[in-house]
Length: 215
Image (cartoon, rainbow, N blue to C red; front, side, top):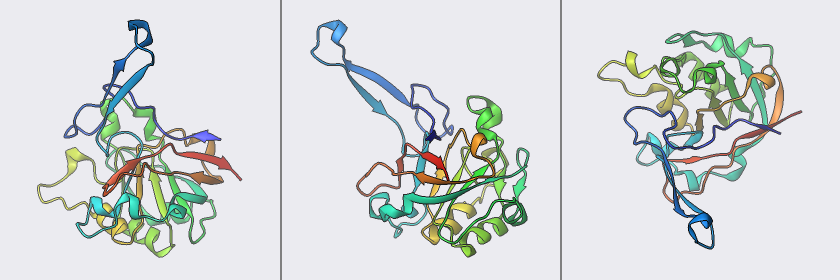
């Protein structure tokens, strides 16, 4: 099994408008307590997580309302070449050389996870509108990215930015996984994915331990 999720730790990289991630100790055996117990404080959109339709739509399904089979199944790992701020086209997804079938999970490998922990991580490629439409038309059930967002990078967004990638995909109940890592060994392959999210009642998203097994 390939682990495609970032570990959660204090001060881990996240979007600047989110609070800092904190992993702290409540009790320690070395301090005379019977058990080690930690506390985690993390926004639902920091770390490797899944966006539910409710993230973009007030009447959208919450993370606990989505069917479990959305998060498990055959997947295609599609490699794309794009620089920071560049758009990923539908043609790049279509002509990657990887077979993409209706009902698949789609993992988009840009290699941007190599920049995790640096400023470069936040100037990433983004999904074009035609690529979003391609994902919808191909019947993809779940899509994942090895970067902080599939949207236009934060520094390039206009004041009236309306999150077109999220609104297009989530409107069709296609959840989005962000901050994926370690896709390189799987690039160009088909695999089986398990990406079960935390069952947050009424949640706009949920963290996931994303794993893949090559077929």
